[in-house]
Length: 394
Image (tube, rainbow, N blue to C red; front, side, top):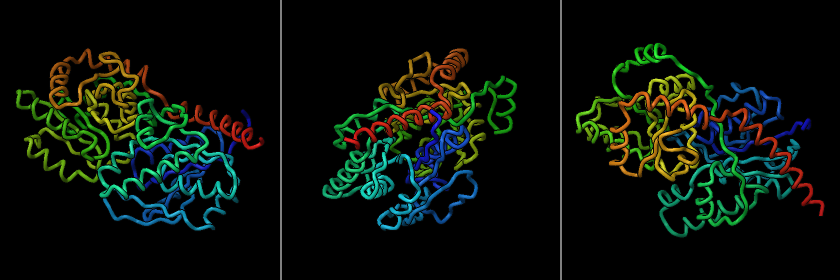
């Protein structure tokens, strides 16, 4: 396919706001640009701390409301007619939104004025946030209706795992979907024992202890309490270990207090917010197992990130993050309980040969690069455009 597309990549989060969807949008734009697959333009709300000059592709910012918070989100406000015309005048071949929120609504308004094919990727289980944060039933109903209308407006809906479809159905979506997995922006690296030893020394981590890591947003509904309760049990049972907590988020103050309450303060290495991807990969390298018992995440980018350096993951059986993971072969599976996490870790934590074997298989079988993932997506863009033209010629 020689025809290069002009692609509008919509995301409600983009640096300096960092989360999973922000990471996805960056990688789509970067790989489309670097692999000469088309002309990407990021479409995202304005942010007072934005530093868009750092990127070698265009970033189009539209009006927003700024929320002064730890996570630094801007709320898009895409209601001005002139904004819609600016998108129309750019002659995009396709618009791809990565969340059914403000930017998807923006695309709906644009398409009302000029027909452009649209794709929406449903990345996360929005019903968790709606049910947790929206106080009244009428407000919840409005939020569900708003998301559903944005999803239904897309010409094609993508999900990152089959398990994500349950969330779509809870919102009321009844249409078709396509599984389009995310990739990993960390290169595959095979580190020697000597290199790992040197990294542990650099990061001030004892050489002879099992090392567990959690990587992601510091929010309770990622099942972080299960990790801490499990680690507290392991410690009570007389086992020594280190737990790396890598990330930041709205609940980090409460999580730190719970760490102290559980008696884990001496066991935990709290990294805080890290942007440098190489530094994050170094932390995966010194870890024996990624603890990711989230049943909220629909794909779990961190599982592939850990696999890039042959670090296996412990995941909840039948969760979306565990999709495609074979227990004891490409990862480890447990039940959604602190007891199950603890008993699994006590069984495997000191079995270095098993951990190494499973980590190597994870690296070989579940890792997918962003280059491969985005090339697959761009191939699909051409099909979406062809189908759109066919449907609109009738």
